Length: 298
Image 1 (cartoon, rainbow, N blue to C red):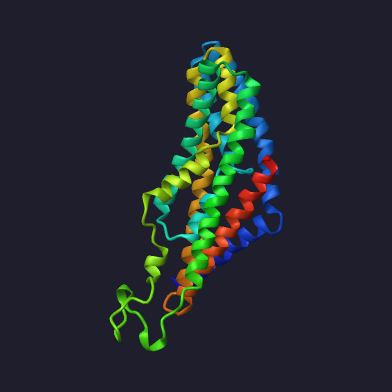
Image 2: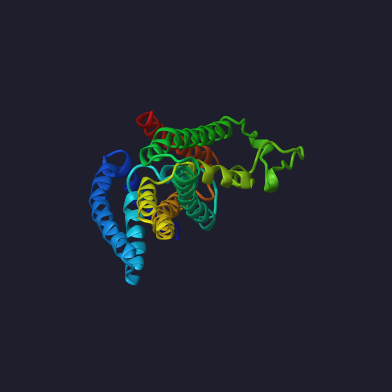
């Protein structure tokens, strides 16, 4: 079992190294961009079929939107860095993080619908103004919020790293208590990793959901102009599920990488020391990744 954990960790680590240090992320983005263009063309064809009353065209639209969302999420944004960094830095069940990833993507769909229908119908914004609000105002806010979450992860890891360890004759046992003096000398490994507050989940979802997906804006604006807004809303949620699939895969990989590292060190004194180092590395990953997007958006 331990050999399996080590092997899994090495594979995931190699993938992360290729993506973030060897330019693999750019290659993936270029590959995905080609598919985005193909499915964008299919979305346009399906929309014309929906407007013409073709019953099958709606299903074609939903399928094309789902596929577009999947490949679009392989590019920059969509919370992958935040979800991955959080899963790497914090002890969180993969099911819980996957739910957060799905809710974040659905939140982006809701924000897109609110922006387009609120902007075009209630306020009378133009198409260009709606897109400008998303790109010039909401995108920097979202990236800035994600940077702050990364700083929080980094600071939390640094605090745990520099906590004064208990002396050898005051070693804490279960629950963090010391047999010699009966006092707690610091958090246990489980406490240091545990997710205690639902506000952390809210913080993650909100940080991602603030910025609507540009592809969703395109579909919503076009369907508004074509008089088939319901089809646009359905396509937006299908697109969100496509992006969610990517972020869920990132969540599974991040939790697996963390579990593999700590599992390989189980039973050694290094495990407790490695936890804050992982959290610091995760915080730096989030800060650098989201910071680059923030600078590009400003």
